[in-house]
Each structure stands twice: as structure tokens, then as C-alpha cells.
Image (tube, rainbow, N blue to C red; front, side, top):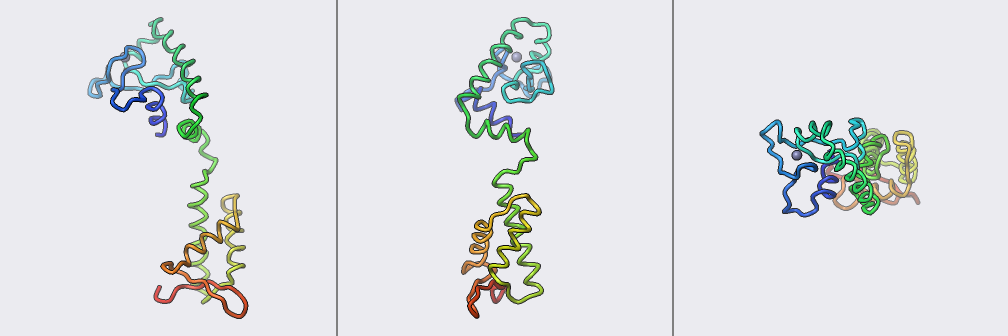
Length: 189
Ligand SMILES: [Zn+2]
């Protein structure tokens, strides 16, 4: 759960600081059901998992808030404070938090991993049939597979992967022959 680093950065910025309940400001006791730590939905809407709406509270204080007007005022102030914090801290924690709710949008890293896998699969598949492949055509075919499978494809990044895979320690080698560039398995692999 990526929410925790966000809450810690916002509510407990000093590393030595012990985590306390957002209402009674006493520490948590993980072995006691009443005083263990829970996620508090400050606006009382349990379906609103926006970062600004979540804080740490005792299980008991979370229950007490339903009837405790002081706690309800604290929650109101915390929502305001958290929204301000979000505006002033538009960095990785905010982005991480947003990612939780937009899981269908692949990140750059997800795409890099997927494209690398597609490249390696293509080479393994084709070079089990042919001894060598036209380097330019290989770039184009892999880029097309990346576009079809992930919705994104870049010839330049495919070329970069191929260069890495055919470095002197790689499984593949790139060479010129008959005026063309080729890629093949490295001998001994
Ligand atoms: Zn408490």
C-alpha cells in the first residue's frame, strides 16, 4: 500500500517522532484492539480514499468520533490542513497516491519493462528459426509489437534495448555483412 509513505511524510515528518492518533495524540498499541492503529476517513465517507481524507487514529477514537464533537472539529481542520499540504507538496508522494486510483494508466517504468520483455521474446522466437535477422526490420517489427500490445512504441527505445542486448557481454551480437546490419545469437550462447 503506497498510502503509508504519504501519510508518514505528511503527518510524521520527523523520523524520531512516534506515530500518534490524530485525535487524542496518544501512541498506538498494536496488541490492543481498542488502541491499535486504523485508517481514519476524516470526512466519514469510507469510500473516499483520497490521501487528504486519510489519517491514522485509534480504533476507539475512530468510533468515538461519531458522537464526539471535538473530534469532528479536529477532522474538519485536518482536511483543510491536508489539502493545503497536497498543494504545497506536489512531488512523488502525491503522484504515488494518485497512481493507486489510476491503476489502468501504465507508468513509464511499466512500459519499459513490457517493451524490454517484448524485445527479448521477439529475438528468442525469431532466432530459433533464422540464424540472423535484418537489424532495421527487427527494430520495426518489435516497435509494432510494442504498439499492439501496450499502445506505446518507440523505435529509438527499441534500438537502445537492442544495443544493450548486443553489447560485448550480451546474448546477441550485431554485425555488418553485404551492406546491411544484422543481429544474431552470440556464439557460445
Ligand atoms: Zn486516539
